[in-house]
Length: 155
Ligand code: FES
Image 1 (tube, protein in one colour):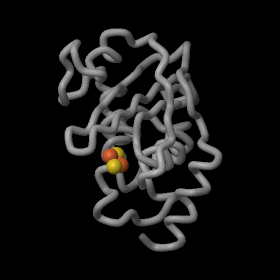
Image 2 (cartoon, protein in one colour):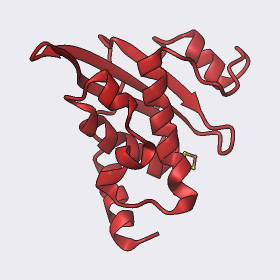
Image 3 (cartoon, helix red, strand yellow):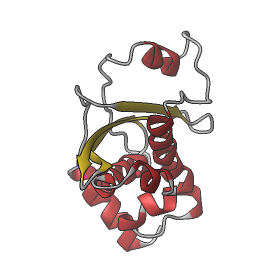
């Protein structure tokens, strides 16, 4: 991974922004990656601004790798002020843009964040395993449950 991208990811991990459950959220989306087993949940709060409905705040929790956490941290900052249509149009690459170009093996980490955003915007549940016997299924079944964030060392 390019040193600049690595440094920005490390910085975002040291001080993740908008981390945590949002009690008064208007929307929540959860996704899980079947490939790596990581999960991410995103909350959105909307407000009216100049006659338009825009994202006021976004927050996240993750059982994920450092890259996914770093992308979620910068993405939730980017989303403030976006309309629903603008947010829906954002790709994982755009959501991760403040970190720089991610290496190919990390693209799916940004796509996890994109997936959680889309799930929140559309009200869709993850297409990944969602039976009540899976962790994701349990989290989806109990949206108010606390999700412990674990920052692991894999990157
Ligand atoms: S989201 Fe699975 S390794 Fe990054």
